[in-house]
Image 1 (spheres, rainbow, N blue to C red):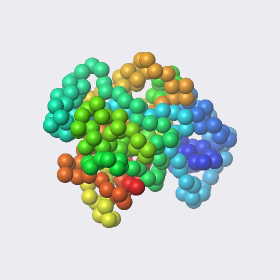
Image 2 (tube, rainbow, N blue to C red):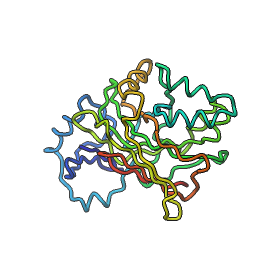
Image 3 (cartoon, helix red, strand yellow):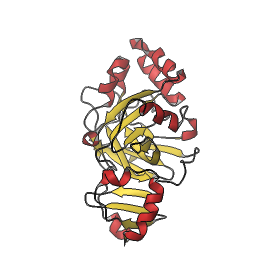
Length: 277
């Protein structure tokens, strides 16, 4: 099942059939143990709507008071890219050590204030010269740390800033318009298939400027492992999102530009489409 958020409604999608729930508080609606079973129980109480009506709705990022965190260097391709971009600053070996270490790299990515939804405009920093989107399977965990669902995340990154010095990571990762989430929260009855594919396409002037794909089974870290480290010394009263890292990195001579269209598709979840401001 899937949950969509609009300004006025919470919509459940069950096998393509859409239902508007009677609930209006997003945080209390999603922050549940066994969210899948709760959604099943809500369908008989909810109002069915047509696909035509649904297509006319403006979808929002599926977030309200939740924080967004992110994990880095979880794929080998990401490790190699980070080492290469930081080698001139003397920080290249840091990423190799993180990839091999027991402790993952986790960092705060933002909140609803810095996040856009489907068709929203993500941003690149004015003081950055090399920027990329990072398409990431994103976990939704409730306040007890249980993984209840999944969405698509775009972790916008300023590679030129992070490459100057790894300590600049917060500036490279966190700024207005630095993240996108959506189009929904996918809530399966069991963990997402390990062979799920992530696909990235970047269009410029209506032409494909870059495309690539990767399976989430290439990820070194396990989802529950990342969740356990995040919740080790942190609490999230209404749940939290965690971007799980990227294995898709454009070549070093590529940078996104204003007007580019970023299209991220993940099996089972759908497609998140954004534009660069």
